[in-house]
Amino acid sequence: MRLQHVRALDGVRGLAIVIVVVHHIAVRAVDPSFSGWSGVDVFFALSGFLITQSVLTSTDRLGEFYRRRFWRLAPALAVLLVVAAVLWPVGANGRWLIAAATQWLNLQQGFGSPPFSPHLAHLWSISAEAQFYAVWALGLVLLVRWKAPRWAIVALLVGLFVASQVERTVLVGDGDFLWNRPYFSPDTRSAALVTGCLAGLAFAWGWLDGAAARSAIAVLTVPAAVALWWATTVHHLDAQLYTTALPLVAVAAAVLVVAAATSAPSPIRWALALQPMPFLGRISYSLYLWHLPIFEEVGEWRGDGDLLGLSLVGLPLALTAALASYHLVERPLMRGVRRTRVPIAA
Image 1: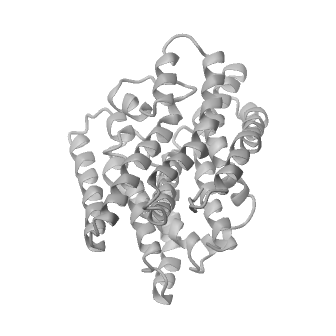
Image 2: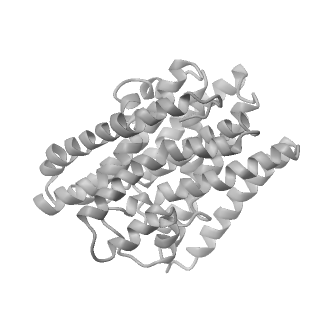
């Protein structure tokens, strides 16, 4: 991809992390009605898009793909978990530490009962993505090696999207449901990952190269952005999240990702390529890891209703921790990973 496309994709990451971070400030200090779950779905759609392309370029080196994914993500997570084990070693946190380290925290929270760890609960999405890497990468490699027709691969993904939607609708159908089951579990929270995969296939197969396709994408970016804005008003306890908002945001997030990756001209794509969005996107993984435990500690110190404390103390501390993690852990290891031959997307 050209540099401007990479900047725009980093901008999509930046948008996602801004939504998540603002949400975790809002629920503690301002307005708990602001919901940031859509930021996670933007991350999911971007992961589906990039990993699909990475696998398509390395179908004969699956082991190499997994090795690079591990060194890209695991060290920064391990540092956080070591700090968590030292600072919060007692009580129920042991369960969350083990679940986060073994990549099944989303299942533990999906089939368990609240309350969840105030410092580590956000790591459920890291577990979900790790499971996705394991299943989709292997599945796509096998489909390619078996020479499955493209329409069959697309039909499989569309079928998974529909099945997930049906399952969510059934789970929340009676209005009296346990929100954590459809919210955290991989079978019911896979919509954005699936649409990201579909977008990745369409991009890799050249279906988005034409002027007509780029024009359609450019037109769709505005309603996609509106859908993301609307999603911030839908609470995770609202059945509408699972019947309407999740599939809508999954499609909207995929549109924004495709717009960033192509030459589709739109004000949304232009805005995503402007600083500070690409900068925040580059450090988004570390910022995602560190912001919640830092906000929790600042909230306990200053009081959860203290917007000033979270904004002037918690946010700078989270950015500092993210920069330290990015420059001392992530970036040095990424340099080593990039020396290998297979072009795996970061």
